Image (tube, rainbow, N blue to C red):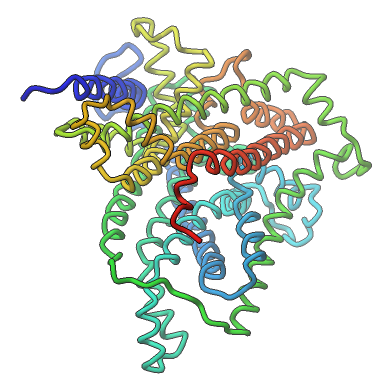
Amino acid sequence: MRWSRDETIARAILFVVMAMLFVFLIAPLLTILAHAVQDKNGRFVGLAHFITYFQTPSLLRAAWNSVWVSAAVVSISVPTAFVFAYALTRSRMPAPLKAVFRLIALIPLLAPSLLSAISFVQWFGNQGALKFLLGGASIYGAPGIILAEVYNTFPHALMILVTALSLADGRLYEAATALRTRPLRQFMTITLPSCKYGLISAATVVFTYVVSDFGAPKVIGGNFNVLSVDVFKQVVGQHNFSIGAVVGMLLLIPSIISFVIDYVVRRKLKAQLTARSVPYTPKPRKLADALLTLFCTVVCGLLLATIGMAIYTSAISLWPYDLSFTLKHYHFVLLESDMAAAYGNSLLVAMVTAVAGSLIVFVGAYLIEKTRNLGLMRKGMHLMAVLSMAVPGLVLGLGYVMFFNHPANPLNFLYQTMAILVISMVVHYYTSSHLTAVTALKQIDNEFEAVSASLKVPFFKTFLRVTVPVCLPAILDIGRYFFVVSMASLSCAIFLYTPETILASVAIMHLDDAGDIGPAAALASLIVVTSTLVCIAYALLTRVLLARTQAWRNLGRG
């Protein structure tokens, strides 16, 4: 079969994107696997390192701790997010109040995972404001990790469950009401079954996040060892790359299992939607609406108290001895130390990641969606695009150390540069952005490309003049997502930074280790403020750009 010039160019570009994903995702994972079955001299030792790991009680305990702590977080975070999502989608509370609740609930997405741990130490630590509530118990260890991770994962579960609850078929509730079915029975027989896949997906996402998160366990975990901290100790503390590779492989197992479950769930979720479905409109229920409003108020109060304590800590002299207001911590971070360079590095990495990531992801998604006769290339590209979801940031960073630090690797020049940090961010967060782009592209009829081809219009002109303007909201959303997650990410960068390329999230960890809680809280607060300002700027920019480029959307209205 002969390809046209446009098809040849499209395949060439897609091949470059696929090669990038192979080199920066698949190859590092294969390198970890190789190190897990080799000794320090490169000789094959089979499963010897795995046997050693499982015969070491302290190391085996870390694996068990990761599993049960993650399960505990799922059992708290997912039900809480479900009730919150139910209040947002199935109650008649005022729309402005819903908007405020939703905004507050998403704040944890803007903060590094260390922020919640620092805050809970200030609330319940040895000198905590509410330490008396714990009696003789300690916040350090499993209780602190669970609390911090519930805060960190709540918005992730909420976004999934809001979507699941928004897809209800109103006809089912109308029929149940006509048959005089009680509200509780409607909830048990209609609501829960209709969003069971959303619940499963939320549970797998939360479980994967907690297993692979490094920031919160490092700050508040104390002597309670988990896999994510264990791999850091093995590689950085003991330079034991073989055992570190074993832990990395173990971290992949729950992530891949969760990924497979989530993939199956998403496929079945599509089958639940029909063309005859009608939107569900909640009816007023005074008592239920009041209780749901109260629940959302309490949850938002707890979320604000968590981030509020971090901000408060950054604005006082010394907790708990001198509570006078001061800006010295911000002055120290921005002017008196090298933390300003770390903050600047984070800004640079986030901006470059937002631009480069949006371009690479959208072009890759466009080519696999709109190029004909791709065959195995389409399946291979999609598989690699979604695989990054199953790879924890720590594992990806460890793979980069083992792969790019090898002297024989021609890409060795990337190691210990800002470029490797940007690449790791793009690859690690590729999946969510890819799915966003694919969803937007599926809304565009393939007739555009067919007509352009028949008129012999180059595909890149169609791409620039039709596809990009139509998908502009999705492209901007992808850019915002890359910026926010890159500003807060720690696990990707923890193995890759140098004194010259240190990021703000890593600097926060070092400040906390040194006992400089005030400056650590100040730097974490700066990340939140920066991401918030970017989100506001994004909202304003989106409104202006859409008004200029997508006026056609309003032609049929009015």
